[in-house]
Length: 316
Image (cartoon, rainbow, N blue to C red; front, side, top):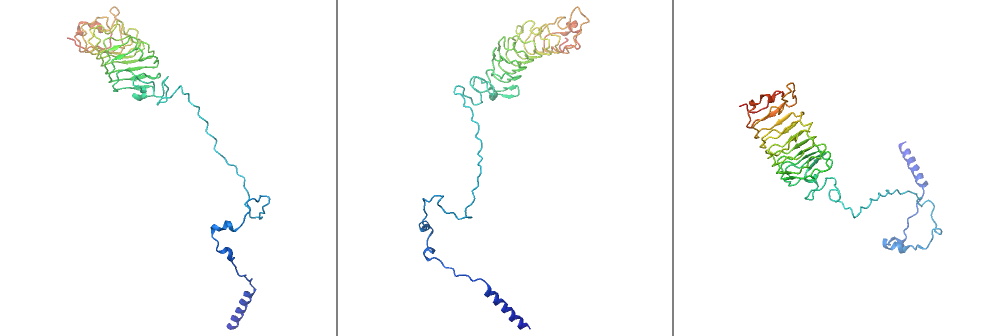
């Protein structure tokens, strides 16, 4: 039975082979089989002058054309050309006005490059300056301590209507022009200590704080009634100046008066109080320093009756 099945299977396979398609033998063109790549162009003769209309194109073999829009970036706007007559300096300024770093000093550097500018405050401490640098117009606080400045000119602070504080501590200032500070409408604090000032110029009435300690004012360095119209003056420090008197009159707003280490030898009963008005009380003036002066405070007891506190000084 097994042998009959094998015979049947062989017979079936033989019929299937006979029923399959026959392949024709592959023949190669002996003339083009051995042609190199460099000879392919000369093998076929293409007519270069054949126009598109005359060409026969095989249907289905041409890639369909696709129309695409090419988007190019829009051109950048052209920058306006700068006029040759107004060249710009390295800090962005022009020779005719201040730039980002402020006006230029005598050394040719912008003030805010030579000094340090923070908001509306200018710090020129310890720069070995011999002259005050020009300041930006918006300056409110100016510090130029520990330099070699010898003089303050009338134009050094011109047109600085916002200036509120000037600190020139520890310079060599011996001369100040009469109008150097007078025209500053908002000046509140003036610090000139540790200099060589012999004459105090006229000051604006807006001052609240004055420190001219350790100078050389002497007997005539402060004009009469120099502080009379300063109705907002709170602190007045004139220590170490060889003064021989207390500068009068003192404004009612005064809270602190430091006159130690001078040459003050006497005091009048109406220096701080009113001789004929025993009901008068001067509440604001609580801090008076007269120590280091050759004055005996016990000789004028009525001069302190209106004060909330006695002055500090020698009672013998």
